[in-house]
Amino acid sequence: MRRAAFASACLLAAVAAGCGGNKQAKQQGLDVPAGPAQTVQSSSEEGVSNQLGMPYIATKNTTRVAGADPIADAAGASRAVFPSTSADTRPNAVALIDARDWRAGIAGAVLASTPMRAAILLSDGLKLPAASEEALRALQPTGAKSPGGAQLVRVGDVARPPGLRTAEIAGRDPFALARAIDAFQSAARGTPSSRVVVVSADEPAYAMPAAAWAAKAGDSVLFVSRDSVPAETRAALKAHDQPHIYVLGPPSAVSDTTLDDLKRLGTVKRIGSEDPIDNAIDFARYTDPSFGWGVVDPGHGLVFARSDRPLDAAAAAPLSVSGSYGPLLVLTSATSLDAAMSQYLLDIQPGYTRDPVRGVYNHGWLIGDDRAISVATQARIDSLLEIKKAQTTSP
Image (cartoon, rainbow, N blue to C red; front, side, top):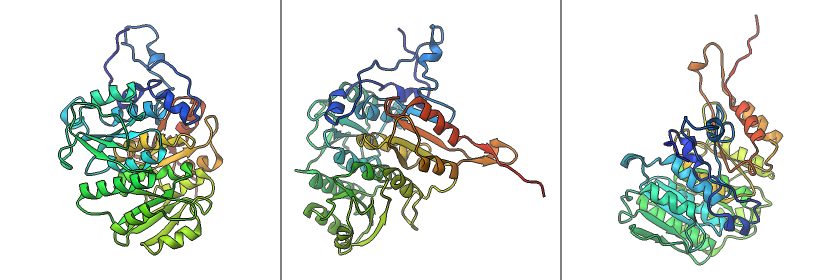
């Protein structure tokens, strides 16, 4: 079968579907049966409309990165953001993150922000999965200005692809690794940020939305236990010299006792609700003068991922810092849309009075194949993102 050239981001996103990383997915308890990679036929071949993946890959207002697992999703999202057909469409660097620990992925998402602007790929420990290897070969990173013109940043104990200028980030545990990532980001920026996001090291569904914000804003993500602030996290926060600390998650994930302890290290605000879906919506709505998405009106990008696939938050992070920008929202079911999510999308649904061409639009990225988010759910999201004619009443 001949493959047609990829002509859009949605088709680039499809290239990683079903390839690589199933072993890692099984280690995380994910049910991800193996499947063939999506291919795109030329227009002269039979069945081209099915192979283009409509509506499985794209609808009017949504695009799906159709990976069977987070490793494939990271490869697909990276190719969508960085088509790599020329020097200016290649990433500065690639962050290769250890897929054996979701916390490495969420903390490492900050490397997708400035100044690194790295693509994110996942490694199965010291083994480089086929999907990541293929994507790395295609991305051809140009080299970041700092540190040392690195083309590859190894985050954790990961594969070491040859032939690339490489920087290393290591830590003996998730708290130490997050601190090391934060120090690396501060060195690349030239100064520590004035803001830090703190999340639970034990409740991934509440922590996931932090990855998108880290990628967009360059604010590091650090971890705490429910009832204590580990020494490595404490040291990292001290390096920021009384930063603004935003705790994402409810008291069941990060206790009020821990909040009080954090207040000795900076100003502290909590964002979030007891339900992971509401928690993500709260973060999407939230705004301070210099912090928060503030997505309370139409005209935004949104990223949707399953709450039980926390590494998808890392895989999708580059989508939040390019194109239509936007927060990560989580779904708890493949086959249904929670009432709170439906209401939120209705609240920010675009509308027009005279001409939709003059309107603003929402766009959604869906992360994972139809086992993660069903086609029916995709269609429902598409409908809620669609611009609608405003209802008018006669005087």
